Length: 536
Image (tube, rainbow, N blue to C red; front, side, top):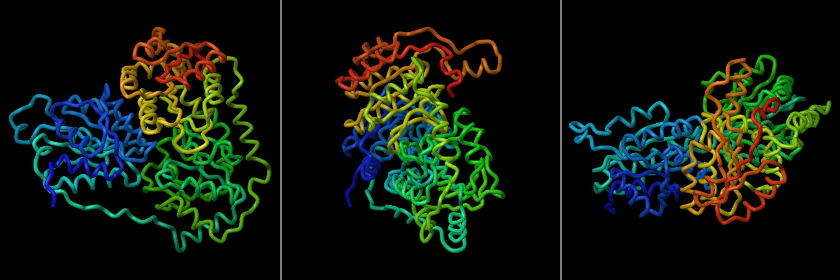
């Protein structure tokens, strides 16, 4: 058997899993690891901050499907990544975190930058490991298996300096992936009975469907039985949102909830298909009664959240469960009062696209100009709530965002990672000015990597969502406003293009130029403060 460094064995297993990109900020403690990644065929990309590096990795993962890799050095390097690791845990991202660490014997008498990485990250990861030379192959396979098992999440591998260089024996220990679980017996018969009797069914579809590769099964099932589909924000596009049965994303906008929640409450069958309520806010807590409505929960993990309860709970593959339930059941007329088109029309009126200028106009104009296959990312804030209702997704993973943790500063690096892994597709990042300021330094990374995302900054010199909540509580304005900055100039300063727009015509022209540009483009859309009033 071939003898290699332990770092080589780890890197080769990651390559075998499809990984081709790693992101991070190196220190002396990870130099062997970087060398091993490059030797294995995994390109290491230098970023400016580990938190942004994790989001770059995630953005690439959503395009190529491979587990994302973040590399950090000891102490402050890994501590910079705590936010993005927590995001991966709550947003179900199989992030592989590789950190350098001081050898255990040295740490007995040396304390500079030494802290227990595994203890820090244990609460926000699915598992943590310390690499050993003898167990390198097993640890690598085990980490990948745990990270990618439903529901997906981050795993830390701490790599001691001497272990990375130690001679190790490569092996072939690989776990066989489990076969899809299909409901059967009495449970399946009850599922079929509920479906056969339903006159007002609705599906609420979540992220597990994407993990299962079951978007096509959802569409076939919805069309066969005329069932309208509501999605979480991360599952937007599971059913093309131009489809007559698509009711769009939900979970964060009280304005949308006024229409969607009564509709769901009036259903006689609620199918929760891969639905993970970590994406939803309190307005979706216990909005149905399984004693009065048939509720079938088809999901990847047991219900420990208690956001809702179900009549039947089925742990298994969403697509396989839908196919089994549909077998032998004849379609019937649903929602005979025309409720579905009426609801779609009401939602369209609630989020109009015809305002002269403001955040809604920015979103509407961008959707009109940018090609259907565009990958969009959006940061947290008022603009995210509005865009998630207005931005129509024709396919899954065409709108990327943080919906579990809802962290700021994610849109730009997510867009950069998506642009790196899917260079043939237009990519646009929508960000508030506050979130953009957190990660503006990564524009230098975009220039260095030759990436060409379009970055649209909603420039209103305020943390708009927090300012709105402040006013709603009749509190004094404090801590939410900041100075107007020249974001277009920042784009040019880092080697890209930069434009400031103040109306639809200017935005349309700027987007057309950005689509043809050879660099990234920052478009600062200056809008009035309080422009989200009544819109979300």
